[in-house]
Amino acid sequence: MAGIYLHIPFCKQACTYCDFHFSTLLKNKPEFIKALCKEIEVRKDYLETNSIHSIYFGGGTPSILSQEELQSIFDTLKKYFTWDKQIEITLECNPDDLSKEKLKELKEAGVNRLSVGLQSFYDDELKWMNRAHTAKESETCIKAAQEAGFNNITIDLIYGSKFQTIESWKQTLQKAIDLNVQHISSYNLTVEKKTKLGIDVLKGKEKEVDDEKSAEQFLMMIEVLEKNGFIHYEISNFAKPGYIAVHNSNYWKGETYLGLGPSAHSFNGKKRQWNVANNNTYIKALSEGETYFELENLSPQNRYNEYVLTGLRTIWGCDIAYIQNNLGAEYVKHFVDEIEKQNTSLYEKENTVYRLTKKGRLLADKIAMDLFA
Image (cartoon, rainbow, N blue to C red; front, side, top):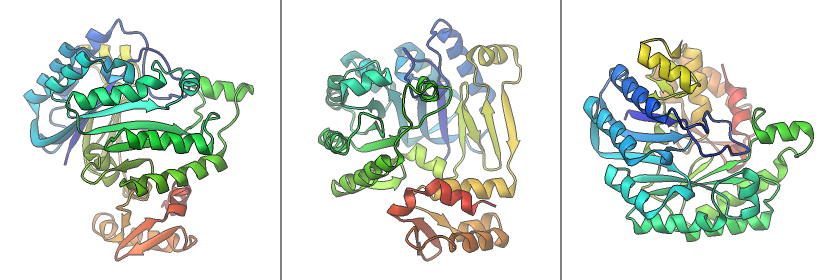
C-alpha cells in the first residue's frame, strides 16, 4: 500500500516549539510549486508500483496553498500515478485558514481527510506557542469543516506545557471528544534546541518539561479516550473504529512511500532517501537538474532497528515471524533474548507478536534502544 508525502514548507509565523522545516517567506512559493511538480515527474518510478493508496500534505502549513496551486499538484500526481478508488488524501491545516470558502475549495479538489492543528483550547497557551488562531477558532473550525461535508477529521493536541494541569488536560480531552472528530493525535511537548522554546530553556527563561506530569497526563489520555470509543493504535494516535490513518500506519508498518519537497523522506523497502532542507537549494536543483537529496542503503541491522522502533509504538507490535522471514533467525534470537530481559509488566506476548503494555508505552523509545542490534 504505497503512499506519497508532500512537504509544503511555508508558514505564516513560527511556533515556539516547532522543529520542522519551514519558511515564513512566501515570495518563492510559485517557484516551489513548479519544482515540486518537476520532482513528481522525475521520481515517478521510485516506487515499485505507480498505484498509490494515500496522499499526505504535511509541512509547514499546506492549507496556505491556493486552490490553483493545490490543483496543479493533483493534476501532476494524476498524470504519473494511479489512485486507488478508496485513496486517503490528508491535508494538514491551521484553524485560521479554514474559512467556508477554503473548506469548499479543499472538498472540490478531492481532499477527504483534514488534519487540523488545534494544539490547545486555551488562549494563553496558544499565544505562548505563537499560534495564529484563537481558542474559539479551535472549536468553530471543526464544526465548519463538518458542515462542509468532511467526515474524516483528525486534530492535533499538545500536552506537557507549563499551562497544562491535570484538570485542564482533562477538560481539553473532553472538549476534543465533544467535537465528535474521528481521530486525535496528541504529542508530549518536546524541547528542541534550535526552536525559540529550546533557546529560552537554555537561557533559563523557560523550564524543561515535567516528565512526571507528562506521564500522568499521557495515562489519563489513554483512559479517557479509550472509554469514549477511541482505539489507541500508536503511542500518539487514537482513532474511532474504521478511522485509523492509512498513510501514517504505513510508516509504522514498513510500507513504501515517496516523499516530495524540501526535507521530505522516502523509503522503498531497502533504501532511504531524504531531500535537502532548504527551499532555495531545492528549487534551484530541480530547475537545473542537480542533486537535491542524500541516499542511504539500509543494512539488515538498520532495517531490524527501524522495525523495532516503529513496531513497538503500535498495537500491531513486533512479530518475530516477520523478523524471521525478512531478516533471519539471528535477529529473532536477539529480539527475544533482549525483550525477555525487560520487566514483564512492560510487554505482553500473543502467539508470535510482542506488544507493549500501557506502562511500557511510557518507555517505548528506551525499550526499543535496549532491543537494537
